[in-house]
Length: 159
Image (cartoon, rainbow, N blue to C red; front, side, top):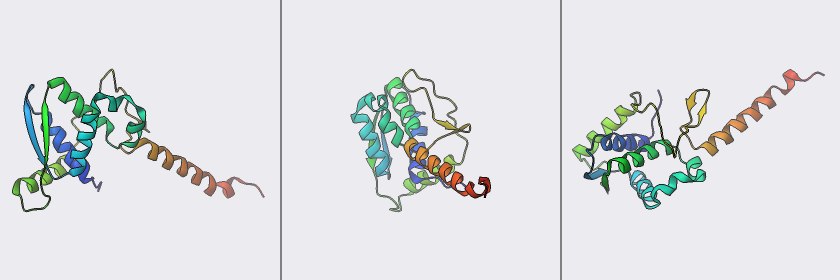
């Protein structure tokens, strides 16, 4: 079973909800994810410049999804305010949302392509999108290749 992160589940719930909003609306979203709220505010405060620089994008697991969210918000002129609610506080709607978010992450993604003049690539490895920070992925890949060379030394060496 592929275990999903709670951040991904919460983020996909926000992204899915935003995709249902009509243009030119003001929305309040209540979530128990401080990480989502903080990241949203950080990207929002940097305006669109967050996606103009490679460095933060290499370290963020969900850069392409954040880009989709902010691009959708901008294109549809949606105003969003995020509110923090207490987690696991026997709030029926919060518990139900968490449950549905986790279930939705097990479904195949409705987002199949990303076309933009500003953010046009998704890093891939063996036809699979890399959904971890790219720097960390490259570090682990290099370490794995080095380890493979090391363990195959004896097999390939001639005494």
